[in-house]
Length: 440
Image (tube, rainbow, N blue to C red):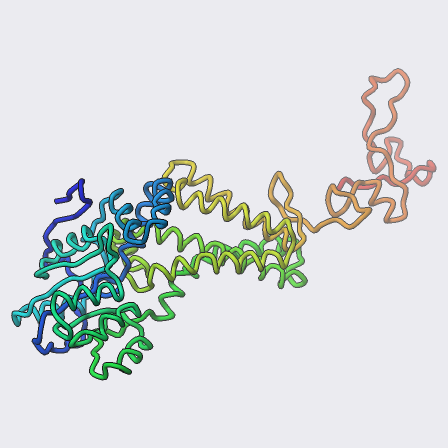
């Protein structure tokens, strides 16, 4: 059941909805004091603040931009304004199976379990109500941002110094670990675990933690780069592939980095729908394999790389890539949901790859049939590689003839087309004429 006034999902969890536990057996708790679990990056492999803002931007972009003004009043107020505007489906969040398995094991021993997060208290209560594993919750309100030292103070005030165990997964949790009785890590990097063990040698990791480089590569969708091989088509058809190989490769990479940036934006804005899809739910951002903040940072980095590569070619190619970026962004955000417009947009995007390849290779794309032809050198005819009849005759050293014989006096004025052999059977050389040229 969803409450529209608070934006909280109060549905109970079923066993089929829970993620599978980790393969390794979770460590056994000492049973000393309650267990406090962090939410963002620990219980869930995501960040609820970023998730909420992206979901709001995808549905109400102008409202999302207006909420940024609340940052002037503090991060806690900003979180409150976002939750005021949308309902978050906490059932589809990427939960950490290892943490859930450990919580269930400790709960079976009778240990009290608490959920403490810097996210808005309404979202924290929604997650708690969904899982049904916690005895209490702590979260941020409009006046308090429960993170770092503030969280440590709140937990020590409630449970006492060293009177609780804490599961976290970020550097900001070091303030809490320094004052807890038992330190556990989930979702943290190996570097964070080493840093924690410098002060708490018996800190335990519940999972492998961190993201693998393969997950970042998958986020780029390199298999989609095959579409950009079209940039080599104009140079190939124009027989200039060898001298243009470097420029075409630069164009290929520029299009590819630009496309990957848009793919990441699309994945970040489609998180809820991707998680409902049987195949898309395994994507790096939807599954939590790559942190959302890393995806947000990858977008400008890829666009900058694409821009720098485009600047290595010509200003015209930069305009083509800019048009491609604008159109593919519009497609991802809006046009893909419009019938006919989506197909037309895809066709234009393929055509832009051809145009960009022609610009990079210095090959013109003819308008009627989109057939690439080499750029003419100064003084050459623009009607084809052979030029006009007169031009071919001039290059061969033979004067050309007009296409038609002058009209005879008293004739119909239409003229008579010349043939290779006159009607009287004499050769042109015998009559002092010139051999007519064959038709092109």
